[in-house]
Image 1 (cartoon, rainbow, N blue to C red):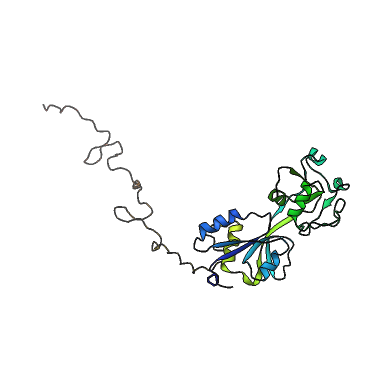
Image 2: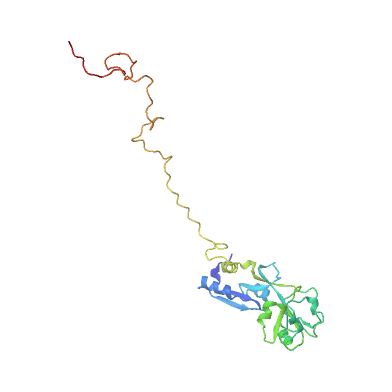
Amino acid sequence: MTSSEASPSFRLAYVPGVTPTKWVRIWNERLPDVPLTLIPVSAAEACAVLRDGGADAGFLRLPVDRTDLAAIPLYTETTVVVVPKDHLVTAVDEVAAEDLADEIVLHPLDETLEWESRPGLPARERPATTADAIELVAAGVGLLVVPQSLARLHHRKDLTYRPVSDAPASRVALSWPQEETTDLVEDFIGIVRGRTVNSTRGRSQPPAQPKTKRPEAGGTRRKPAGGKPGGKTAGKPAAKSGGKSPRSGSGGSGGSGGSKGGRRGKPRRRS
C-alpha cells in the first residue's frame, strides 16, 4: 500500500449529476490539513481519468471494468423522461417505455443508460451532449430519457419530467485504481460508507496495550476466627446433660439438701 504522504492532497473526480458536497464537508472536518480537489469529468472519460492518475478516486456510473478499477456501488437512480410542461405526458404520474413509441426520443452521444432496445422514434442526428439534448427538448424537437439527477442538473422552468417505470436504471459508484489504494483513499471510503472518525478499518494502528489486571484476593476469603468458637456446635447452646438435675429428689427424705417435697413451717415447741 502506498503511503498517504506521497500525495499532499486528495483529488476526487465526479460525473455530471453526482453531488459530492456532503462527503467533501466531512473530509474537511476530519482532515483539515489535506486539501481535497474536485475534478468534474464526463461519464465517458471518468474511467480513463482514474487509470491515467488524473484523480485518486471518483464518483462515476456503472458499469466499469473491474480488472484494474475497484468500485463500491452507492445508490441507484430513478430514470425519468424530460418533456415540455404542456406535453400530454404531464397528465400522468408515471409512464412506460411503450408510451413513448410514437415520440421522437433523443439519445445523446454521452448517454449514460444502457438500452437493449431504445424507446421512441430516432432523431435524424444524435446530440453531442445531454445539455444539447435538453435544449432540443425545450425547442419541441423531441423527448429525453435520463437519470433523475441529470434532469435536475439541467432544470429549466419550461420543462418537467416523469418517471419511466420500465427503463434501465443508472447506478452510481465510488471507484479508484486497485493498485493505488492509499491511506487517503481508505479515509475517503470510510467517509462515504459512514464510518465514524474512530474507526480503524483499513488503517494501520499501533498495537493495543494489554489491559491491567486487578490484584487477586489471595485465595478464598475467610472469616476471622476471633471471638467465635470452632467446631460444628459453634454458636449453638450447649446440649442438656443426660442425668437428672441434682435438685430433683425422689419425693422422700433424701440426704442433706432437702427434697423437692420438703415443707417449711413453725418450729415445734419443746415440752
